[in-house]
Length: 374
Image (cartoon, rainbow, N blue to C red; front, side):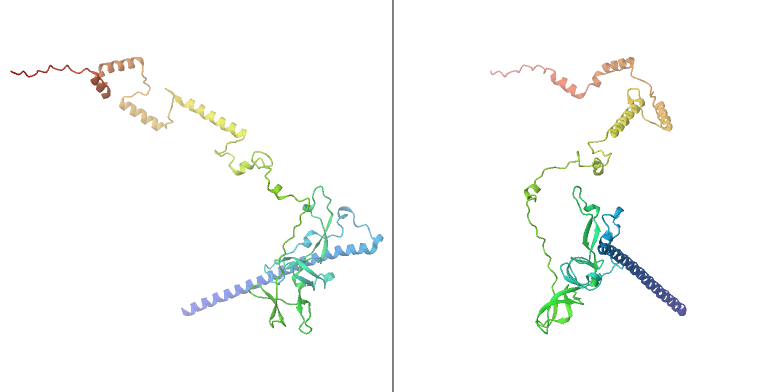
């Protein structure tokens, strides 16, 4: 029995080990596939950008001998790249590295794009999920003006110039440091930044000559936007003035907003459609007509009885000697009146008897005899 239990446990362990190995291989294959797709997308973006720039450069070099390629639908947008090229693509693995670069840092381009390699600029936008940033004035491309930016009645240029994203691995932080040999402060390109758990960053291979400790690089301060007053600006008192009150009874409120706020056939609504009112009125008339058809005898509605109930009701009336079709005729009413006159004293209410008794005159008093003195 012990051998059987041991063999069963060994088989279970082997199955679990094979399952873990299989899942590890599948995850590795999925990771390799996602990385390959991501590389293909980046390569296609680079090819589009290179072809657009190459076309503009050829036209500039040929001058008047350049062929007429700016015709048709792309006449005004020739040499531009699709808008998706300047949009950052998220990391397909769902994990991204903390590079220690924020908006406002000065960075130097050390990788792609090759044409801007060695240039220094200020970071204007950072996308952590895509591990990319946009540097002001670097890697600028021409894109067609989107439709949402075209204002009616305003002449917008068909082409806009903007910065394309650069991967964070292609830029390095630039910060002023003191040279330990000369003591002169100058800009230095930091090849590797180290981040602390508390959110600070420093250069691991550099010791400050003043403190003898690693040099911590401060984060850039968030600059508040500066607003300037112009003559065409609207005054605050005009903005806060209430000039229109919205209502549900007139435009621009949609006609079906009441149906969205309250049920179309709710009994709490005070306004209904004409078709709904006509339908309700016809239902009321039909209900009244059916009630009139059900009336019988003295005008009271007849009860809807089943055949068994009607049979039991007829048997009870026969047993009690009651005829359902008898009515109060004049002869029956005359007999009832004679009976009431003949038995009036018995039928008289007690209150009336007491009232008649109080109205009778009191009995005469007997004369009182006075005592005579001798």
